[in-house]
Image (cartoon, rainbow, N blue to C red; front, top):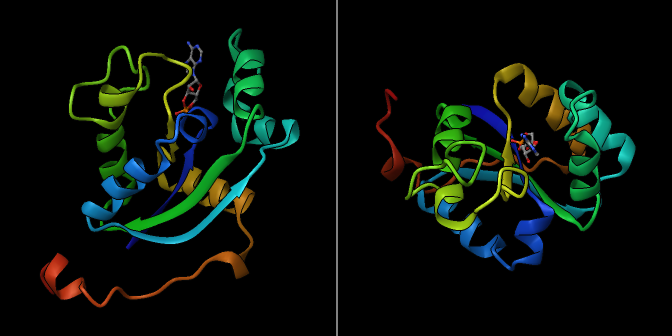
Length: 152
Ligand code: CMP
């Protein structure tokens, strides 16, 4: 099993889309093992988006991500990092394919509704940034035998 840090961003919270997005993850049989509504501080934003801090769009990105609460989640599943990124679609909602979350709900490259880790190293770093160990509630879904074969 793999884990990904997922943020439902301020646009998702403000637009009342959290329930629809969470439903997509649940419908896909992914397992949510941690979740909290929280404010991202400017310091956290700089750590989370360290690779973007020097980019021209960073000041706007920081204002956006700190401007209203986010719903932070840890989502677990087989190949979950790739599975969720496929579900999200291209970074810009203007380019994301129909049927993906961003393709269906976003018309912006900044306000793209959801962040998800782009690799295992990023997932470990981002999970540690947003959650303490005692906030993670790992469990085995009782429906697991109906979600996948034993050898998957
Ligand atoms: P995310 O997947 O969270 O990773 C970095 C974020 O920066 C991205 O989603 C967008 O919200 C934002 N972003 C990426 N490219 C641009 C851009 N060119 N202009 C403004 N925001 C951007």
